Figure 1: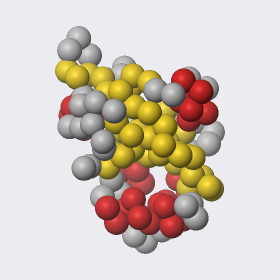
Figure 2: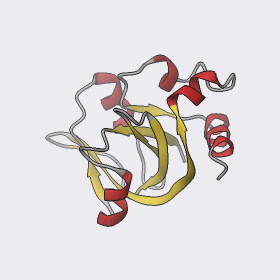
Figure 3: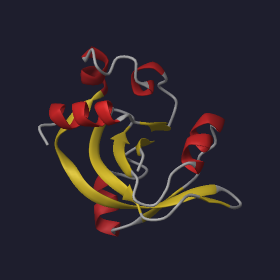
Length: 129
């Protein structure tokens, strides 16, 4: 199982909306690196949901319910798992020595990125999950 972080503007599609919808099709990705990452997502992979824009914070966890599909556009079905007890902001990530080299801190425009086991654990600890 792999772990990922997906970014979205909450005014476009928020974690709360995902909870209401119970599932969603994640698509509309144009960046070549993000597309490469999305193509690697498999059913069961865990995913941090990151709100971009004014929030700039990891707010929840979702799960891929199917492998990524590479048709007219790359997409993957996701479902909500849980909201983090406390959002983990980008400022906290950048200030955290264990996370400062993560793509989230270094590549602000990358919308889909891998998350290592250590990064996952550290974010959960910071969120007091």
